[in-house]
Image 1 (cartoon, rainbow, N blue to C red):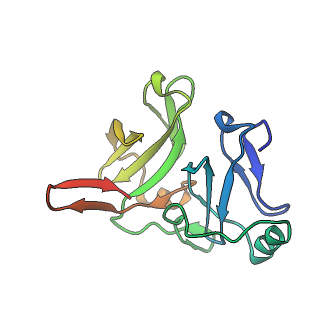
Image 2 (tube, rainbow, N blue to C red):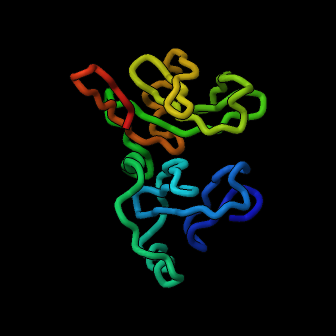
Length: 175
């Protein structure tokens, strides 16, 4: 990957911002016409909506890309007329990098996490009336749900994430 933290997947297809923390490292891209999943050393970084066409995917295979196995994460939200479709009542997650001042931006609004999380990628879960910031499986911040439902489809990198619960013992986890 180039030293500025972004890479281009196909010549006229799509560029992906991975982040300066990963600059200079080898990344793996899993891609289809719906989703793009970048990873480093087997660690899934984020999920993006794909703008790749069948021609782009064919170009990639002609340039040596190998067939992908199963996707490493749930797919990006489906799109209708270029807009993401957010299922009513379903939680949505996005990945956000914490800036040096300890803030993240979600749907053009800024939220303070903490400076000790600077440089980290957090999972931001929009669920019901709350928004949660999760770092490596640990809840680090919660805010009132800040985004009107009509703005959710415009959020970049959103993906649907159901909450899975076991009955014995009662335990829940995302994914």
